[in-house]
Image (cartoon, rainbow, N blue to C red; front, side, top):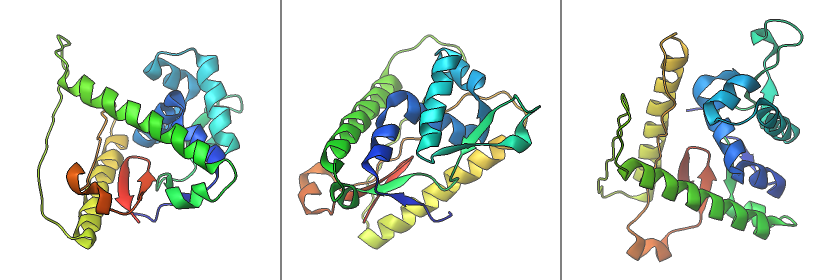
Length: 203
């Protein structure tokens, strides 16, 4: 897995806390490149709204245009600015003006997203061709071993992401929600984590 760029600008944290922008980042991560119209269809939002959020993400250097993928000069295709992902360390953001408020906004948004994903996974559905897999395992690890497992899982997901981009098969975007932590009754002894788009690792 490539090194992940770490950000400490509270404005960037607020940008990725926005549910629509977070989903746009996820879709671009899965697809590699996409147009505003395609993102609008995937998220079921107006195309001009998708374009607005893309411009906001571009303002903070999180996405960029991919002119080599465009059909002509008017065609705007977007990609993640950094394929390795988006990461921040809580303590670094807190040291910046407005950092505490930005961290709180992100935490509330991330918590709501996590609840939504879990509730959706357990919901009864009559949809055709929809499969959900829920796994929960307990593993005894040192912090170093947990970091190694996190990297190995991230490499596996990245391999599948790249494999999917190389084929033309019709696919849906799946959320791979990874949470690795001690059981909550011992969380008080764990250092503040680093938040990473797609996964979390301790400092």
